[in-house]
Length: 208
Ligand code: SF4
Image 1 (cartoon, rainbow, N blue to C red):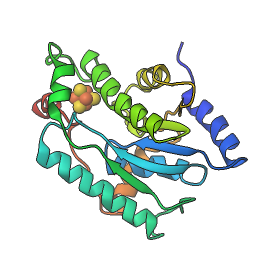
Image 2: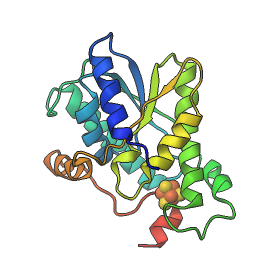
Image 3: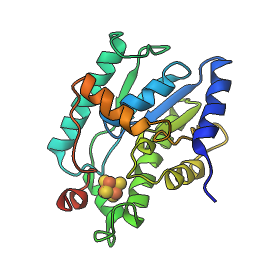
């Protein structure tokens, strides 16, 4: 039975708004997905963006998407976004090491998008986020990936929950709910953000 992670998110957000803002490390796959997520997060959490995406195996593309994340963070911090953050957004970047992704994807190259290769890809990136969050005193870690209709939110939340520690909690989410994906398209157009046409790895690029 599917769990309603969007409802869980709303409950947690209500608690966050009634307390000292929790520190959230938000794994960001790309700027367009981050737009709609920030709209729902920025008034309740102290957000740090975490760009860790070894799955974007083409270095030029990885740089391009990072550039758009920087641009979005600047827009938000300049007060030009639709919602003001509680604190200026910070951005942490993990250097690209595509080899780590290829090791995870070995033997799964021919998997369909959404299958076992993607589960490994999610585990790699969420694992990186959890490790950084744990080492740097965050209360929560979460991801923008659940905004995409191409990403299985149940799978993402299960992986995230499995990475929790006694001092670090997973932020449950299903940001594609409440019109999240369409909001990400609208906001990307409004702020002139580049929207890629494939997920990230070479296999997803070759399948378009
Ligand atoms: S299709 Fe996307 S989520 Fe799946 S392995 Fe490739 S980059 Fe990762």
